[in-house]
Length: 217
Image (cartoon, rainbow, N blue to C red; front, top):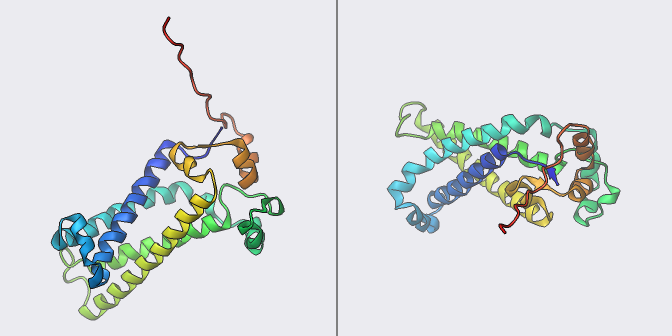
């Protein structure tokens, strides 16, 4: 077994995911009248309107923790362009034809940087339209534009979130990496061979073997 994610990273990830789901549901309640029934999940319209921005603040700081841990691992590399040009082989599972990859492929990096930009846009526009605490921060015409931009950024986050979840399910072994923190050596060799080679050069790269307590006699 190979360690892929530390405990703090996994905790940070799931807090971010929970915030994202809560924001999508509470935000959808105000996106269109036909979806207002979703506000009942959070105690009604007034309660939903109150907690939505606070969950957004929590999302921002939670994702900031992930960003500080992962930004350097998501910088573009030369093999990312080749991987993108061979997306057909990726979809067909012909990974033997692909270049060796670091910890993340071009698709994962796209999710990371896409979410980074959109969440930053969400927090900025969210503060601009947060009338409870910033009623005079922006003139009304600019606030109206911020509402539209905020909704568009949220929609973009939704599509990236769905693609991220689908890819995690489609690539077998990805979800356990974020629940247990480890992957098999075979999984790492198949999907992120360059990362595995880099990791093998470091001390204590492998996960500790499980301990088995002897049964009492």
